Image 1 (cartoon, helix red, strand yellow):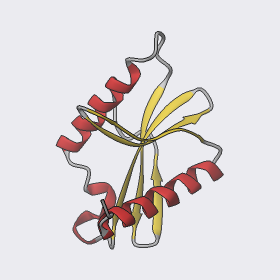
Image 2 (image 1 turned 180 degrees about the horizontal axis):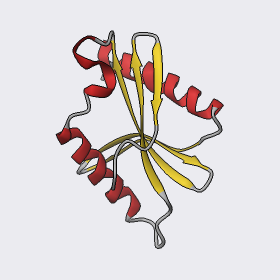
Image 3 (image 1 turned 30 degrees about the vertical axis):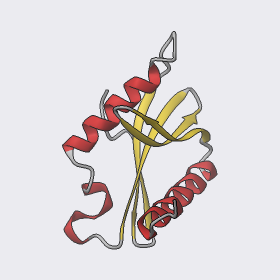
Length: 116
């Protein structure tokens, strides 16, 4: 199936986020983890922490920008997907949720934005 322009933009945004996080020393664990309860864009390792990363892109900051587009319902799906992912661990690692927000060309990395 051919990708839509929105899917292609999402891929470019995830690539930019991944490049930025790698430059900051994080290591990719998994990309586009999908399960019955949701999706996690990037799962990274930051030293001892497992980091679940939501990547959001908007053309501008109009209407609050990329970070503001993460609704409470989306937050709930992210938490559920992370819980589903963590079921594979016998001992849970320290975890956090980060957001990489792209507003036009401006990239902002927000750390520890959700509580589990």
